[in-house]
Image (tube, rainbow, N blue to C red; front, side, top):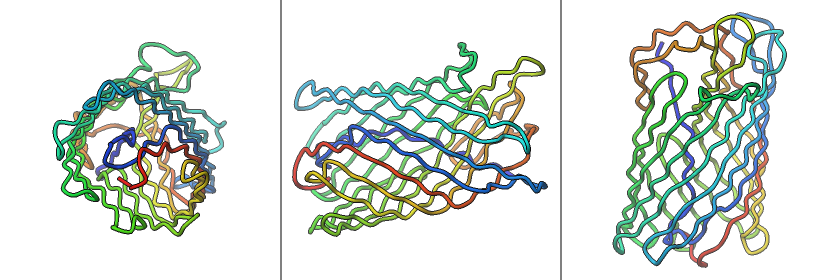
Length: 300
């Protein structure tokens, strides 16, 4: 069976038309009783994420984008094994440009280090990036066309990005879509917002071992969550409580056991031998805090 591989998209919310930029985002989530295939054992999966975006305005047409993101996953990779911590640290360097009233773009480079951080070396380093072209169809409607590509321990991966942003005339209903990676649909009720979002995560991490062949973890997770968001300080501080379902598969492979190429939901030449049992998904609860800088009173 072909394994669906999705990527973590680190697209900063930066477009003058959208009216704001999320400068800081911190989240903590947990799934419970994730069962191992063909085993009575299970594990819990906890996830901590932090993302900082710092835009530097060059002129009225160009903005330099900097930032960092960090994630920490903690779980058992094998039944009855000790818990393993998996870390990923990414630097964001890029440029957001406006070409005309309708067309703009964002290009971001994403070098990162991803492993258990026990013995960091050059083998823990990966390089990726994305480019998105945006068409402002109307004041409240933007289309997105782009491409994401990255090197991972399992090989090269890329996916096209197709999406749109829509804000209703009364600024209450919002759709923010970057498919097949992320989607957010919400409705604002004054001090609170209710919504549902979808997020696809795909990462790899090198594992440190004193004996035996070197190994890596191939993470592929999907999150579908409903949420309630509380809007404070004139919508500058957002607190979200989320709940829903998340797949939590962390497959272990021998280093050098790779696919030929990954494209969106397809992996070509995937003849790898998985070393650990599949891990099932489960109930996922997550809490997020966001600091949002308002550029204008209108939405995107």
